[in-house]
Every structure is written in structure tokens, then in C-alpha cells.
Image 1 (cartoon, rainbow, N blue to C red):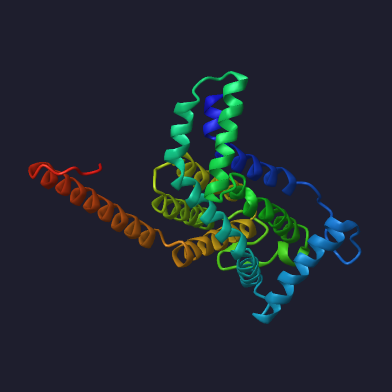
Image 2 (cartoon, rainbow, N blue to C red):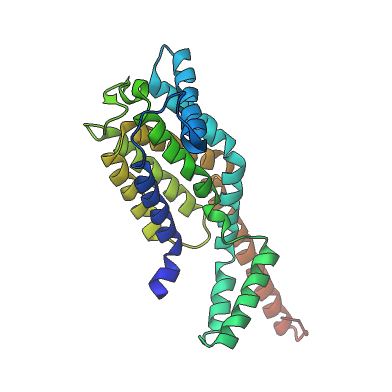
Length: 281
């Protein structure tokens, strides 16, 4: 149980991606203007039309169509992902206080745990963070993953389309796109971990890229292309809006200032003690 609590974000992410794989396999009939229902007749059909329309602007290059549509979707999600990243950074900043609360309320009885939850919620409120906000962008993107996969595989013109060395409806024969998707996922995870005040979720940093490689290795190249572009976009977005190098430098500057202030305080106390003065600690 303790392991599950510590790794709940990792397990949730893997569960969501597993659901994507499961739902992506649902439905085999070709999508056309005759398709009915909200999911097939509206969402998947119009998703396919959008990719085809953009592709026609580039000489019927359906790979470029997927790249452009993916970039547009990620651009629309920037406000949500920025909120998520800031929330995660703030959550990491209050980790020391959270550990103090756990030590203050170590007992597992109902009364103690109730007090712990109250203190925990008060800490979240004062810090202005939401522990569930980290999953919001993933929840929003889930339908996109599934719609893209089915739009390509169930639209004949897309399923047989070629882009560079791959057929969009088939797995990458050279595994280049899955590896790129995994590398960009790893890059984004490492950048996010660099911006944290304390190290956490090391397993998440390395397991998620491997899981991305695994699912894109088995599914269509279109989905691998989507993950490559989407996670590459995440790397650029993180460097622009939540630059971990800048955050780390600011944190180091603040820590140096605090250490210098502490040195000055101790120096003042020693000077005061030398001359017999009363100084507040």
C-alpha cells in the first residue's frame, strides 16, 4: 500500500496510456461521411478531415498534416500545461513542510489521519496548489491520442499514406520514431526534475519514456509521430516558460543570500557577545 501511495502518479499515467492502447483497438469500420454517432461521425471524422485539409496545403503530405495538427493542439493546451508545471513546481517547494506534517502525525489511526488531512489541505490552500492538477493535461489529451489513432487507421487515405520512410498506418520498421518519442519524453522529464527543489519521482522519469517507446513500437507510425512532435513541443515549451536552468540559478542565488544572511547574523552575535551586549537570536 505504501508503494502504491508513493507511485500513484506513475501508476495513473501508465493506466491512462494502457487505456489509450485498449480503446485505440476498438472499432474497425472505415470512417467516412456516412459514419454516425458523436465519437465516429463527429469527432474521428472531423479529426481526419482536419488532417487531410492541412495535408493538402503541403501537397497531400499526410505526415506534415499530423505534425501541424499536433502543434496546433499543443499550442491550444499551453495554458493548461503552464498551470500544471507551475502547480508541480509549487508542490515540490512545499515537500519539506509535507514531510514535517508526516512526522508530526505518524499514527495511522482515524483521528490522527483526519488531523493530518486537515493540516495537509491547509498547506495546499496556503501554497495555492492543487494535487490533482498534474493529471489535467493528460486527461485532456487522452481523447486526442485515441481520435488520432483511429482517424489514421480507419480513414483509407491516411492509413495508406507515406511519410519519409514510414507508412502512417503501420509501425515504424526501423523504430526511429518510437525512439525519438521516448527520447523527447525523457528530455522533458529530466528538464522538469531539474526545476524541482527536491528530487522525486525518479522512477517516473525513466519508466514513462520506456512505456512510450513500447506502445509506439507496436502501434501505427502516426501515433509515434504524434508523440514525437507532442513531447518535442513539451521540451521547447518547458525551456521557454519554466526554464529549469533559470529556476535552478535563481534558487542557488536565493540559497547563497540566505547563507550569507546567516553568516552575518552569527558574526553580529559573536561581536555582541564579545562586547557584552544583549542580542536577540
